[in-house]
Image (tube, rainbow, N blue to C red; front, top):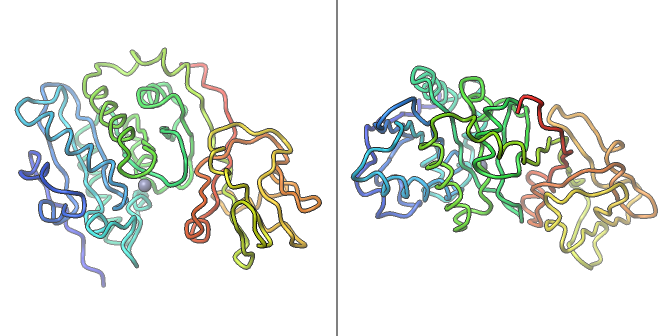
Length: 339
Ligand SMILES: [Zn+2]
C-alpha cells in the first residue's frame, strides 16, 4: 500500500517563498499545495506549477507573483497548484520509482491520481477563467504553447504566450487535457529550466491573463498563430549505437539536428545516416502505431523525410534519446474558421 499524498491548502503566498531556491521548496511547502489567492474581481486563473520537479521556471514565476502581489491584490483571484515538491527538492523531473505528475489527470488508483482528482474537484468548483501549466523542455526549442482543443478561446489564450502553438490530444492524462474540458487551457513550454527569457515570458503571460477581461480581445493575435499537430515520436533502436557529427558509430546524426526544431522540413530532408541493414529509427504515434513508412525513407544509408514535417523537441542528449525519444514530428495545420 502506498500512503495517500497530502494536499496542503494555503490562502496566501507562504512567507519566505522569495528567499529560497527551488531545491529548498519543502522548507516552505512540504507537501503538494493548493494556494487560493484572493483577487479584485472575476473568476480565478488556475496555475499549475512544478508538475515536473526539475522544471524550475515555474518556481521562479511563482516567486515573481508572490513579489508582485505582496502588497496589492491581483486583478483576478488565483488558484495555484504546486505539484511535485519532492521531485523539486531532488532536482528530478519524476522521483525515482515515482509517478509522473503530468500523467495523473485522467484517473487511476495511484496516490498521485487521487491528489489530481482532489485538485480537479476544487478547480471545477471554482469555475476558472483559464488554466496555465508551466513547463520546461530539453534541446533547442523556441518558447511555445500547447492546446488540446481547436477552439477560439483556447487559441486566443495560447496566442498571448507565443505565436507558436502545438495541438495534441494524446496522452489523455496531462493536466491541460483535463483542464481543457473545464476552461481554456494552455501548457507553456519555456525552453530549458531557469532560462531568463522563459521566466520573463511566462510571468508576463500570467500577468496578461490576470488583467484580461475577455479572451476574444486576443483574437487578432490568434489569427497569426503557427499551429502544429504532433504526429509521432522518433525512437532509436535500443541495440544500435549512435553519435552526433562524425564518428564510427553505425548511426550518425547531424551535429546541428536540434537546431531544426520548429523549422518546417521538406520531403528528402536528411535526419541521419546509418550503416545497418534496416532503418534503426522508427516513428511511433501515441497509440503505439508504427508510422515509419509514412514519415521516413531509408536508401543507401540515408534516413530522410518521406513527407514534409516539422521537428520538435529533438535533443542531442544520449540519455534522453535512450529513455524517451529523439524528438517529435509535427505537421502544420489550419486555424479554425471561428477565430
Ligand atoms: Zn514538464
